[in-house]
Amino acid sequence: MGLSRILKSFSAISFTWFYLFIMLKNADAKIGYFWHITDLHFDSQYSTKGDISRSCWYLEHHLSNSRAPGPFGDYQCDSPWPLLESASKAMKDKQGDNVEFVLWTGDGLSHSAKRLSEPHRLDLLRNITDLLGRTFPSQFVFPVLGHEDVQNSDYKDYKSFLVSLSNIWKTWLPPEAVQTFKIGGYYTIEQTKSRLRIIVLNTNFMRHDFKYSQSHSSAIKQRPDGSIVLPSGVGQQQYNNMGYHRKHYHHENDEHNNNNNYNRYNKDRYYNSHYNGEVNSQNGADGGVVSALSVSHESEKQWEWLEEVLVKSSRNKETVYIVGHMPPGSDERQIGIIPNGHTTYSEKNNLRYLRLIRKYSSIIQGQFFGHLHSDSFRIVYNDMGQPVSWIMIAPSITPRKSNIGQSNNPAMRLYKFETDTGQVLDYFQYYMDLETANKEGDAQWISEYNLTTYYHGLGELSRNEISATSLHNLADRFTNPEDILFSKYYRANAVRYQTKACDNVCSLNHYCAITRIDYREFRQCLETAASALASSVRSSVFDINNQISLLMIAFIQLFLHQRLVLLRIVRLE
Image (cartoon, rainbow, N blue to C red; front, top):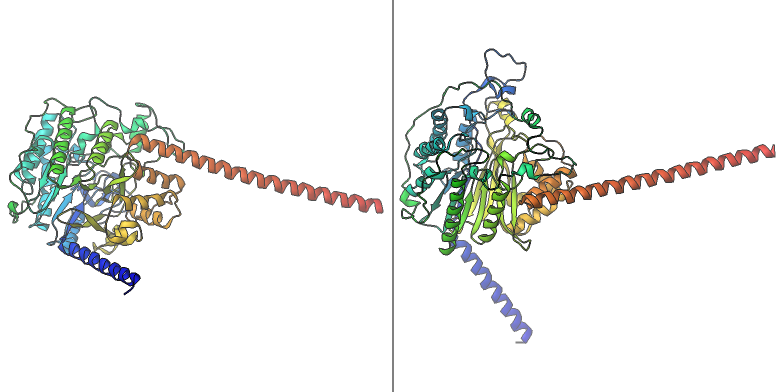
């Protein structure tokens, strides 16, 4: 046997063993699923006889000529109870028993709920909790505190609210998680049969920092369209007039307070009951205010706790999911002068979060957020510019548009993952065509897309695995609004709700928000894009002017030639 044949046989045998190794490895990996729902924004005052310009509330002394809201919601209003019931039923029908857990990333209450009393808000959250408990009686729901779920009040009242809410959610959480939630609204879940740890943050603390009060809105200077953000305190009345309406708030009646009992799963199956190292039992600073420059002490305690948990996870060779309500970075749809700093991280906290993610990126398998009501993602890069982590931002169940965004169809997401390592393999996006559902009186939740086939052919996505590199390759296509993959992304961004076309400025804003989570880098990205667009426009104008000049010269030459011919004819006569 010749040497070439021996080498060929060796190569074939090596490939066979490698293939068998991969197959055995995949066979050993247990595949699981988990749901991600966010921004339910339940409004108990929603009425099909209501006024869509006034949150779809029915007001006896106000007559409206607008169209009537539908039974499952309206694009200008928060969620009615039938919408939440239909979403729960769809989750149970599509993947109910065979799920590991459910992530509920905050904002269970409507945008007007802060005007309600604490007992009333707790009753509404209890209704949602009972609904999810009946839907998933054998699974755990991991809830997150949203910014609409709490009031801007004295910290003593804030802490009292957390204690009361923890009593509602304690059926899902182990004692150690309940303890830290009572202190600051954050907790961690350590699983006994898996290396995957879940870290749940209170992102309300991320908005403000006592030592560094500059918000994202005051930091942004210019957008690609050339508009300038007004200085702090200037044009505030204009902003107030452009935001949500603030009219006709009144007392709401709780129509859905059902205290149904349902079976709970044995916590010992899912939790390690001996988790004491991460619990910080110090009392919070009394007298603080949960608003623009406050609770810095509690915010700092969450930072210290978070790094302690990440250090322990790294030491124990665990993998981590980080879960929260508000994501870091900028809203991909925010173009122009409208500030949004009250619902974003402070610049210092944004940087601090990014540094932690870069430092522990080797153990962070995924980050999951909501808040923006849109379907998007973010990429975290290391100091060398290499993609090292990703953030998924899930669209909302409520169809109501956010402050600076647009409306969307109700949506929910099912993730596929390896249960031991937490490696995310794919996700399946479901949605309700709200207009059709209201017209037909039938709430149908249908498949919108699944990630790995929707963006087929992009690196790891082709191998059914979500990675920062594959998402980086996808985002690189977003600088061109005509690119087919950007068109797909933009259609999904508002969950197939009819939106205006996305031009160069729009697509570059999406690209910069996705790839530049740091605010300074985001501004630089937009400024660079704005300069490039301006240069392109000037070049186009120059080309047009040149063409016009050439046409004018040709016209003059033709005119002179005709005059010369006429003169010759006259002379000959």
